[in-house]
Image 1 (cartoon, helix red, strand yellow):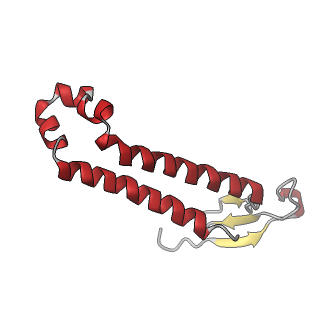
Image 2 (cartoon, rainbow, N blue to C red; image 1 turned 45 degrees about the vertical axis):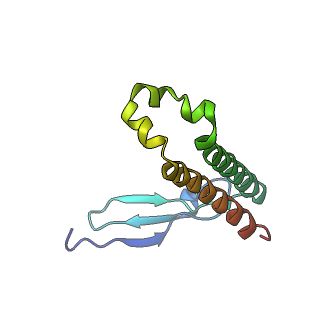
Length: 122
């Protein structure tokens, strides 16, 4: 809205966020409404590490599955989706399509390893 400015002021101690001791900031708009913005707390390091481990593990699992799937007779050649749509199975049987799908799996593995090595030290 033109002419309405938002001003950030420090909240009184009675409106501070309980538990962390840090005062919250209050946004005062041109229309007189106030909203409390809470200051964020830091995520514990162990939780960041656990999230990174699970993310890398999931990406590696998906990457390996996607790399292997096009060359698996049980999963790719006898897939119910391909049996239901014969035109799709013609394209899926093409070696280039299998290579592209495997390439996507390798890309997923690359991203997993890069993420693991990037956050290795800290």
